[in-house]
Image 1 (cartoon, helix red, strand yellow):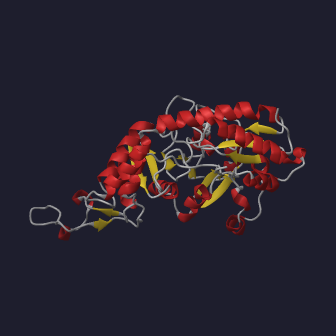
Image 2 (cartoon, helix red, strand yellow):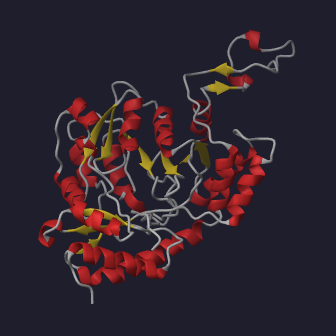
Length: 394
């Protein structure tokens, strides 16, 4: 049978046509399609501004730099997340501290954030909407605000989600910015690419400079009369670097694909929700050994369908289950190894263990979830999981 990965992009004929049109246009690098994608994305997520860049990892780094995070600062991220959430502060020259997570959701909570902050001076907090499940942003904001910290949402998994207040993830009611991923396994695919949603036009302008080597062509921002002609206008070839920046631009082909995919967001979210509902029903006979990860607050748009499995009670090892499922053509994954277990963080901060993160990590498994799946694929996945655990499903 055709193997089922844990995630896969859905690319249709109109997506291909959009990319071909970009290839045939006058612009291949940063051009009008990037601007159109930014504007459309901002409307969808309810933000005043959206700034496209090369990945969610660079989005997080740029967002923190635009908030002046740097040497001597401390940022807090949940222990269960992808590396980028924690490496972005380090690449700014700051330090990182890990907050524990709710063992049922994998999400940082106000209580775990408060424990991570206690007695520390914190510059920024990076809550993660893991798998698309939405963190308690209002509660986290109260804790961060009391500590004098700003918040940048890692929304790489969460495009299309609605938070507890009824606002789209990205409206930034409780944060300075939200950062997204368009990696192929995410809800929207652009090959690669990222986006920063925010409500501050001046900071958005700075982000656009930072993604482009810190350069401006705006005469109003330039210093020195040598840059101006006799009429006081900028000389045609002139630009200035105002601060150190990067080449983190999005190209036109990625923007064309992202813009085409954005028009399908509601369909993709609905299909993922329908498949998740089928999983909930099909997995019920495997309880209590197997339980879906709790959804948290709001109305999530799931990127991952994760389950918690009591491998000890089942008398099996997770790696054995994964290998048996792979042999049946069903690929599953673990999201994520607690960050403090990685050698790079151990070398910086020493050994650490957080109870909620360890419990979640020990039991979590991500099952295949992507819009092109058939309803029957859910039954196939659950049957393979039951067999791999040595359980019978009636």
